[in-house]
Every structure is written in C-alpha cells, then in structure tokens.
Image (cartoon, rainbow, N blue to C red; front, side):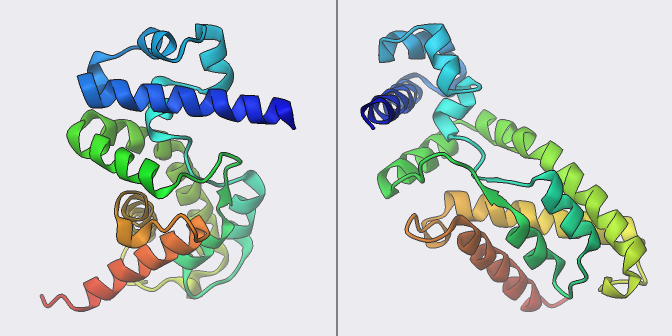
Length: 203
C-alpha cells in the first residue's frame, strides 16, 4: 500500500511539474529533461511513468479499444453503431483527473495549438482500427447502414468522426467532462449533443 502511494505521489509530481512548465513556457519550449529537473527525478524514472512529454501534460488516452472489442464491433448487429463503439471502449487504469486538473488541461490545450495535432495523432491508430471493424460489420450486416445510397466508406468515415468529436468534446468541455461519471457516459452525452444539434440544421 505504501509503495502504491509513493508511485501515485511521483506520478502526480511529474504531471504537476509538466503542467507548471507548460503554463510558464509553452509546450513547444520545454523538454523531458526540463520536467525531470522540475520534478527532481531521473529520465529513467520519467519513462517508468510516462510514455512521452505529451502524456505528462495531457494524461494517458482515457478510452482505448481492445482487439476483443474490435471483434465485437465487427460482429454485433446494432442500430446505433456510435453507441456500440462507445460501449466497447475500455477505461485506462490511470486515475480519473479531478476538476482542477481538467480545467488546467483545457487552458493548456487552448494556449498550445500543437497539442491538438498530438492528441489527434494519439487517436489515429485507434480510429483506423475502428474503421476496419466497421467495414467488416457492414459486410456482415448491410441492413445496419443508415445511408445505403452513399458509399460505405463515407458512412464509416462519418461514424468514426462522430466518435472522435464526441471524445474531444467530452475531454475539453466542462458540460461533458464530469469526473464523477464514467468517461463513456460523458462521451455518450457528447455524441447525443452532436446528433441532436445536427437534426436542427436546415439545408
């Protein structure tokens, strides 16, 4: 128990140090070595806790998709594939950030545009895997398509983009990032907001 507490204290120190430095100097102007010096740890210790500089600032990807989940997305018939994908995501083992941490991350994200590209790159492999699972899903269940008059790849792209935008909205908007709720519920709420808004548009 004491060891777990020490590990969490070290992890918290790394995150706080990285956040402080980014707020002071900007994300592009700091290095892993700067974070290590600020947190009084070695580079080796840093990489025992973090995969990269951006993880220290943004935290780990909150939602992931396992191979088993991708298989279920491909093989489970559903009339709402966005809901199916969100339900099949897995929470990371990392501690859920509190409101203060979420607010700091939002401010940092807004002040450091390069982080947007990094956050997108972190999700790209997962999104491509989901797209492949959806392609197999539509081959199995063509009746699940909502826009059969369009190419399947266009519908897959739209579904993946909706999931991606729901994750982004839930991560960086207080209305959809309640730390007391399951992260998947926050993402579902954001996805419902997007689709409800789209219905109100007139073309």
